[in-house]
Image (cartoon, rainbow, N blue to C red; front, side, top):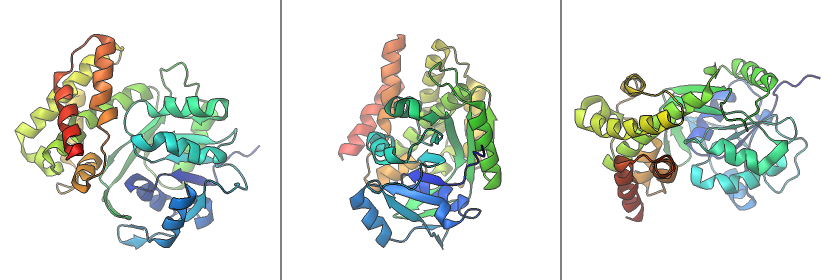
Length: 311
């Protein structure tokens, strides 16, 4: 049976969703890609304009209450972490036995949450995105890099990834000209991305600073480094090898980004939106208690960022 990916559904129409959907639509027909949303939000979306790098996008929107003609071949979660539980329910009707599911969410826990929610109907492939520099104003997104998608095998025994699904995904990304890597140890790669978020996202949000500050300020880099070294400590306790060379690689990545660009967490603070501090510093505190390792830098960042949210 031909199981090529021909239709893609997104859940979450923020910066990530708009960026990757706009890239895919350069190679897909509009009817091959859709955004799923609840009935109230869908009416609003259908009245509004979405753009990527100044180009208006011909996005198709479908309501979660509409019965789909067929399940999605590929379902991609691009919501914020605090919206994941609701997004799982909104997208449920579009998940079939052969639907490949990707979570582009930050953090290290969303795949397991999705897998448990959908049970045997899910084919969740662990993945992460890195190296993109999207900035969102309303429904307009600008970016100079679409970054890279990494996916692959996980050390988690509950993640029984089908190699044929990974091959289907590779062929699809080739067809839409997206940069990707297929990892033999995606768990380590995801922890590396988690470390990047814990260090640079949280520090940038606290300082309300663009990437340029990390490129120019040794002090900003040191704050981020202290937070990331706590990630290395916890990772080692879980048998994951992360260290100073991995922190250096993060700064090499940051140094190549637009100095005026900002992390998504910094953009959230400046826009008065909730942040993802719970899945970064909050998760660090939780793991630190479980593993018997103090994380004082992340405890400080957690309370400081919560205070900004209250403000």
